[in-house]
Amino acid sequence: MPRRTATMLASTLMLIALLCAGVFIPVPYSEMSPGPTVNTLGDHDGEPVLQISGHKTYEASGHLNMTTVRVTSAEYKMNLVEAVYGWLAHDNSVVPHDTLYPDGKTEEEATQENAEEFSHSQETAKVAALEALDIPVKSWVIVSTVVKDSPAQGRLHAGDVIKAVDGTEVKKPADVADLVTKHEPGQETVFTVVPAKEQAAAEKEGRTATKTQKVTLTTEASDDGGEKRAIVGISAGTDHTFPFDIDIKLADVGGPSAGLMFALGIYDKLTPGDLTGGKFVAGTGTIDDDGKVGPIGGIGMKTIGAHDKGAQYFLTPADNCVAAAEDTPDGLTLVKVDTIDDALGALKDIRSGKTADLPKCTEG
Image 1 (cartoon, one colour):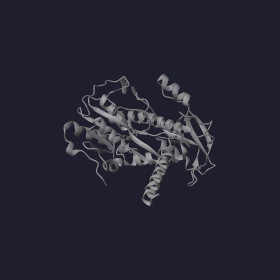
Image 2 (cartoon, one colour):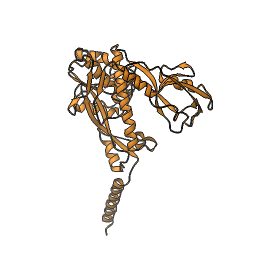
Image 3 (cartoon, helix red, strand yellow):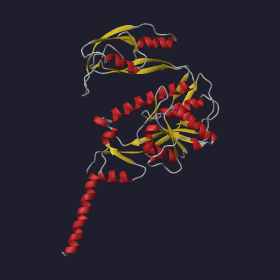
Image 4 (cartoon, one colour):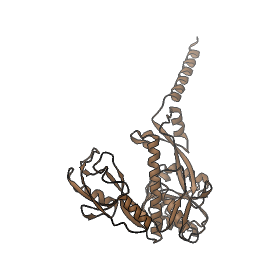
């Protein structure tokens, strides 16, 4: 066999072997891509996304779209060819598998966590919107979760209202940890709580729960690899009573990142006129009870998804601005927001045509 032919044959066989390796050898990566975008002012699957009863509402035009990201499943095994294609593609993003599923998290665990975060984001969106409208919302600190085999298991329960720790009134969830960690591991701490059943009964009957009980717990040392601190094995959260009913109807979505857009949609439904002036505005961002907007993941995929649906403006969490501005889709204006008030101010500029005044995202 001539040397040239032999060399070409060997090169061809090596190329085939490399392609086979690329197809069959898995790599530890996952893929993100633009997901659906839904107008919070409109309908989804045949029913309004926002359903409000017990308070006057107003028709709202335009778009206030929440955005999503699609991700490959925890069990999906990406091969090298797919990873390279994803790295080269403009509308996909390849990330380490552990970024989406840390510590070996399963698909079911990730779905459950995302569902819980989505539910929490709906609650905080309602609070933020009503607070921005000066509509009072009753709130209190509760036991959110109880860790298995912890001092609190069987003594405290999810939904218990935490009134005080060691006699000191609790006003926000962070107070609980602050008061418990004043102890050394092994010392006792006393919780004053309204049992969850009593709280539920009081809410149903429209009265204030007054039946409290004291629960004494012996703290233990944290097991997080850092400095040992006293814990009792609970996480504290906030529960609310709203003055009227607000339901958010949106299935098959998870995570906390729609909070800002839900809050704006609720605000728009409860006020005359249109927040957007009929413009197509999309966005993303977590939101807390005080209206603070927080960063999210997959910002690049969300701006692409919004642009492809026709968005003109994209409300962007301040902490995501630099990353989003690195590859802004043509024709999409990225508007920097840090609070719900920032977002409302930006929407005022958009509907009045004062777009030169918008706080825009810039690189670096």
